[in-house]
Amino acid sequence: MAAAPMGEGTPPANAANSSGHRFPAYTSANVDGPYIAITFDDGPNPETTPKLLKILEARGIKATFFVVGTRASENPELLRRMAEAGHEIGNHSWNHPQLPKVSVQEADRQISQTSAAIHAAIGKDPIYLRPPYGAMNNTLRKHIEDKFGLAMVYWSADSLDWKNRDTQSIYDKVMAQTRPGGIILMHDIHATTVAAVPRVVDALIAKGYKFVTVSELIAMNRPVPRKEEVASLTPQPARKKPKPQAASASAKPASAASASSAVAPRPASATTKPRPPAAVSTGTSLF
Image (cartoon, rainbow, N blue to C red; front, side):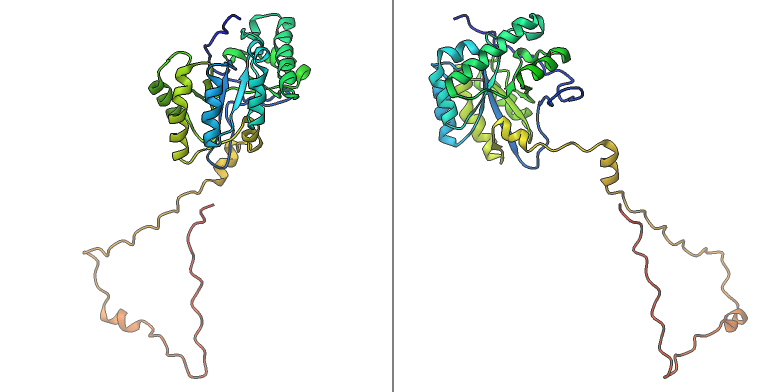
């Protein structure tokens, strides 16, 4: 079997735009908590994937695997192990072409044969597609959503493990980019990636992150407030009261006559109740 290309690109700028589409396309999710999804592309690989599954099992981590159809069809037992362990399996095409650069008929074949291989292994169809290289356009995306019912999933943290086959570099890239609601991109076909995973996930766990599948992360997603809504909810600073001005040194003291003409306050009589003080203003409202 020819090796699938390993490089990835940058998710399209309109990835999160759901206008005119059946589903949103996700690069991350807006969540209330330290939840993240770790994903692995291009497998399964009979040499490296089993080692990765043991690492994840030891830490109770559920991941999402975007599998290539050629490898899935040759290693169905690995897909069954993934599913039995609670991992999620998505479609990553049959042999990793840039889908917008092939005909619609070929794109259909790439997707349908991969979904068929996944179904044959685990008895379930995938619900997510990660386009190879992140390459997609609106026309093809709408066609895939309508015909196959697949939503697009990209990433927010790219390990670049296909390019930098170095465990320290992989660690640094993931740690620098991971945020709550993030989707981490790695590849389970590289031995250096599998070697880096224990340190990466242990460090993220130490920071308080909790790993979930892509489906679980998306289920937590909350709409991002519009700018005007955010502005209305942002507390405004209280207005400062002007400082009392000091008396001028040139001001003349009141004359004795004027002082004596001031009306002295009358004491309250025994039969008259003192009036309560006027209400005191608490200042400008913050909202």
